Image (spheres, rainbow, N blue to C red):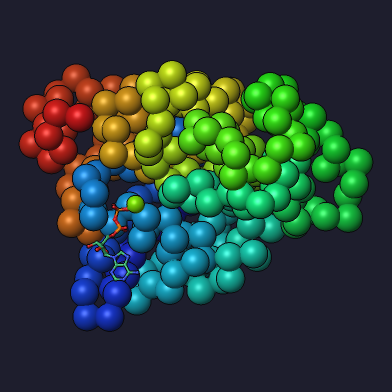
Amino acid sequence: MLQVQDLSVSYGQASALHRVSLEVNEGEIVAVIGPNGAGKTTLLKAITGLLKAKEGTILYKGNEILGTPAHKILGYGLSHVPQGRQVFGDQSVEDNLILGAFTIKKEKQKIQELIEREYERFPRLKERRSQHAGTLSGGEQQMLAVSRALMSDPDLVILDEPSMGLSPIFVKQIFDTLIELKKSGKTVMVVEQLAMAALAISDRAYVLQVGEVKLHGESRELLRDNSLVKTYLGSK
Ligand SMILES: Nc1ncnc2c1ncn2[C@@H]1O[C@H](COP(=O)(O)OP(=O)(O)O)[C@@H](O)[C@H]1O
Ligand SMILES: [Mg+2]
């Protein structure tokens, strides 16, 4: 579904990604784990069209998307939950959801159905549907960010550190949601600093460190041989 080959990205003179290659197959949960500053967000921004890459290829469903603007990529069925959630704080929960559906904005009936689906997924969002998103707790905002990304009914959902700043209960809820998404036929790529938790729910994983893929394989295997992961990530 997604193939990244030899992707390099720099900020001015500073290299942030160096020849990163990875793939995500349909129906998988793929984790990209790595410490702060490893280049995880840079990778996701390059994939979702928010950042220009210097070199490399990014194929999505077989088509080159490198250099394609972000809103077009969203229309192809690839949706992004950004780091730090970035909900629209002065808009209601429901308006945030509607904004997530802008690629299908003429399909009112479908949007209503998708909103109901998200309210079933996260009943808290339904309870708070008229509230400004800025008044929600961090965990609730993360639910909203996930739901907003799902409002374009994507095939591939890419999440940037969904656990950041959340209490363990919310982390579990968000990770359970990723498993549910996979069961419902979606493909998931998740970037995380919480390596062990991300390995526990993913099929395969890539370890990113200072802009390079240092290790990859089946998550089960990486968990089993956790000395490898510890070498790169500490004991998180
Ligand atoms: N807008 C930017 N301008 C300059 N350097 C940046 C910018 N964003 C990130 N970097 C640098 O690129 C590297 C990778 O950052 P990032 O992709 O945010 O890592 P991660 O998400 O894994 O924490 C870091 O060294 C960071 O300081
Ligand atoms: Mg980041």
